Amino acid sequence: MRAVIFDLDGVVVNTAKYHYLGWKKLAKELGFDFDISHNERLKGVSRMESLNIVLEVGGITGYSEEEKQKLADRKNRYYLEMIESIDGSEILPGIPEFLEKLKNKGYQTALGSASKSGRMILEKLGLDSKFDVIVDGNLVERPKPDPEVFVKAAQLLGVPCEECIVVEDAQAGVQAAHAGGMKCIGIGDERILGEAEKVVSDTEELNRVDLERL
Ligand code: BG6
Ligand code: MG
Image 1 (tube, protein in one colour):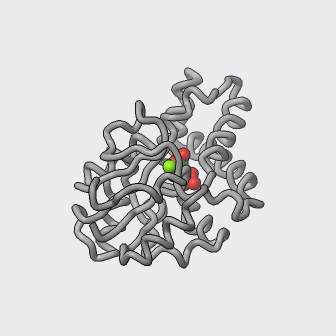
Image 2 (tube, rainbow, N blue to C red):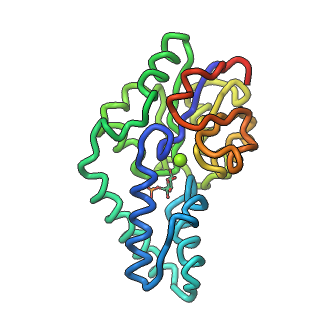
Image 3 (cartoon, rainbow, N blue to C red):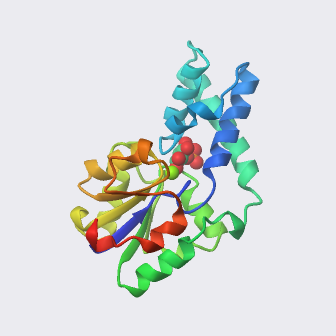
C-alpha cells in the first residue's frame, strides 16, 4: 500500500453536522422536519443529490431545476455561515497524528471529497499542506458512489488504485472506494459500513489499524 485517500466531512473535520443543520433549516422553511434518522443518506453524496433526498423525505415534488438550484444555493449559504468561524477544534481526534504517522512511514496522502468547500476548509484549518493532493467537488462531475473522486486523487498522486486505501464515513464512499478498486476503512457504525475491509468506531482508532493487513 502506498497512499491513503481521505474523505473530508466526518473523517478529517467535524463538518458533517453543519451539512445536516443546513438541510434541516431549509426543510423547516419548506414546512417539514428533516430529522437525524434520514441523515445517513446525505453523507458523501453531492449537494444536488442531497437536495433531492431532502425533498423526497418532505414529500415535495414539482420544483423546476432552476428552483432546485436556488434551494441548494440557499442551503450552501447556511452551511458557509455555520462554518465561517470553525477552528482547529473541529479537526477530528487522532487525525493530525495519523497524517504525521503516514508521512513518516512514506505513504502519500490525498483528500477525496465531494464538497465544493473541501479545499477552502483545509486551508482555513491549516491542513492543506498535510495532503500531497487535494481533490474536491470542484474537480469532479460524478458523485460518490461513482469512484471518480478517488480515481482522480490516485492519478494525481501517480499511485495505482489497488495500492490506495480510502478512509470514509459514508456508505456511498465505501462503495466508491470499492468501485475504484481500492481498499476502505470505514469510520462509524459497522452495520452501515460493514462492506469496508475494516471498520473503526472513531478517528482516533485509525492510529491502531495495521494498513498492510487490510
Ligand atoms: C460531502 C458531504 O462530503 O460533501 C455531503 O458528506 C455534502 O453531506 C457533499 O452534501 C457536498 O458538499 P458541498 O459543500 O459541496 O455542498
Ligand atoms: Mg464524509
